[in-house]
Image (cartoon, rainbow, N blue to C red; front, side):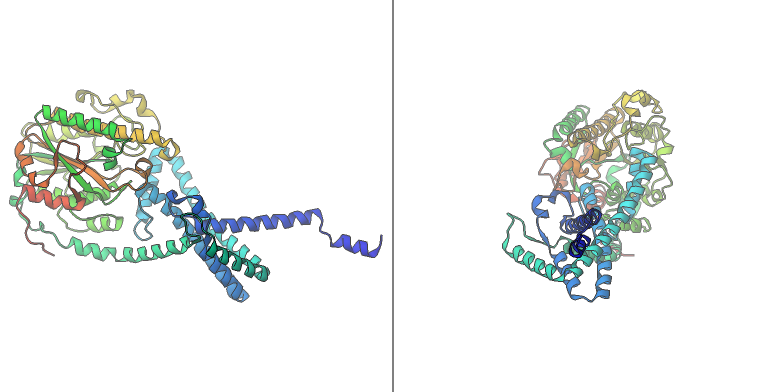
Length: 556
């Protein structure tokens, strides 16, 4: 063999060498594709279209230019920091996608961390403790994995760019020219999704950091702070007043073509049944501060007369001396109680709201099974309240705040309505086939089935409230029932608002005479054109309608 042929043979790559080179380029290509996708990906699923991904990320071009112009050591530092930041931004984008799917809004980096606790609790209730642990572990691994993967991908691409400077420069120039000349129908060619997301969240952080001061200024003004009890709620003297929050009962339940047939049938039937029993009703709309979840924020908003749309405001409210609707009733010599079947641990908030006593889940004596997220059926909750507070003749007037649970996600299984005399300690529900079925995740099921279950669960809650009034109502019962928020977007779809129905029911016509100026329509189903108020406006409107006009606002 000649020396020339031997040299050529040595120069030719062996099969393992070629495989390694191919693998290297494949990994590099995957790294580039991954970085491209995380840069151009939108922050909500509804924008996941081919056009959104067929774009040139402006941030990527800027990053390549920086790599080309920086010396080796600064280049490495910039690549490392940029990779970590891109990873963090990708995690935030994933959080935005999740929050948008459930709560109709992006994740707030300042105010939303406390919401992760209730999310974990929901997972535990719906899929069990093992599922809860698995979900937490997988989430942590996902966060760490995303940051590590983006960082390694950026570092790898940086090395490739630095080794092929001339080719990269030409490629950047060609891409820039193409971006200026190529037009995808209806979609801008150049993407700045990542930069826009970073800017938006930076602004949001500034707003969040100043929200505590802004809220303190709002809370300091209270027209009813010093109103004596003798001037409060004079139009309801001697009445038992029940404020029931119907979980996830939103405007879409009443108006969405897929949901309304089931819910409206319950509302129309309820209106007729109540009228036949001598009850009148009026209905309107409120705008909830939350959607898809955060029921406690809506409840605090309605009862305090302040806009509570985040956990920081909620905590600040709990530490204040704000006069709640419950406090007003107690000041006017009502017995103010909280019936809260969703509370399964210590709940110091009960003292703030003015409840005396608080009936949490363990205090209600339920001996039946859970129905999905709900610790007990709505009918049992109302039955237990009736026995504890309204069964004795001549009892003192009571005001009760009752957040109901049967229409809480995942909206399955749904209990059956039974005769009130058979409710007992709830053990009767053990005989229901649905009572012992494990709840299914709403995101792993056919959306049509989820929506159907949602509609049936709301109809059950409405039927139960109407039946309670028919069974236990009298001339001294006043029922206010209100939705706390709209359901998750898997039910409503994109673009749903925050409006929820609110209804007042009474046998004494004088009660509804007090609210005649509100413009609400007859019946327990709000008309499309009925007034829409911020939920925070209800406290003052209610106190004004049934008592004396407020004093000029005062600050402490």
